[in-house]
Length: 376
Image 1: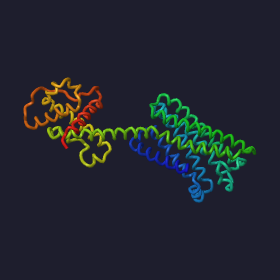
Image 2: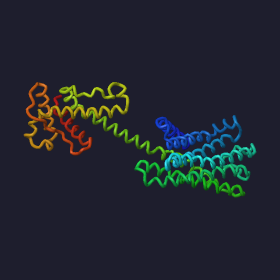
Image 3: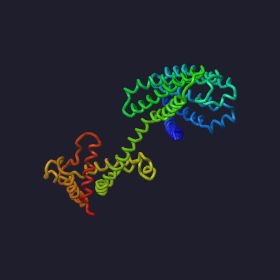
Image 4: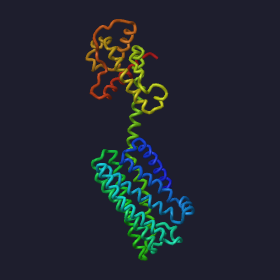
């Protein structure tokens, strides 16, 4: 179950990162995160028994484990590169990323040489059952573990530094990443100690080995979730805004229909959301929302000279929406009948603030009142 969950999380994260990098291919920090997720996603199937067996049968025993560990080293390296690219200017970031390639390359060469030096009968090992008394196997796990502890500890330090300056959703994502990195660093450090103990004929309880593995299995999906949390939170916020604009667009229908029938020339026919392409496009909701708000306000401005009787009922800004709606109906009938405007413009449905939402709120109240005043 945990393996399937990790596979789904990595796949969704990979799809999302590839979509983002396609939109911004020159964003170096984004590229570093994308490569990090790609390495993690490619290393995952190498840990599956069926895939590892096929790779070993095709290339040679131990190949799948070697590829998996090199990809894990690449995951940690690209995570470091993300912080290097984010924390410095592009030139310095590229220089430091090239410097960090040296320990990565050395570690990859060491574990490759250790794999080749291991007898074929011992290469099909996993950490829990590997014979650490074979020097090449111990070197394999120690070299990979030391690099992972170094790279992940550096990433953890930068993550903790940026949490305080991040916005709410990014801070939550960074906290999740920090927790996962802490678990990874601790687990890899413990694994290194256990390698030394087992290499010198020590005995390690299976519960300890299983606990460390479980900690790593939980930390990896938590890390991927933390990396993708800010983007997911942004999508949720966008969805809420989409639903609110769609609902408001529908609530403005009675007011818009009444004003559009009186002033059809106010229609913004050049809006890009017209037609089926605009209706299928999620952004089309926002286009139609703003267009309807503008058309309603324009219609009210043109109709306002016919609303002079509103002043007789008291201050216009304090009148209930239902009273304004009744006067609005009479004004529309007078305009359609061709009656001359009795006075100058009268401001109605005035917002209480300067924000667009304040203006829309008053228009919605007037539209709701107009809906109830219209005959069935």
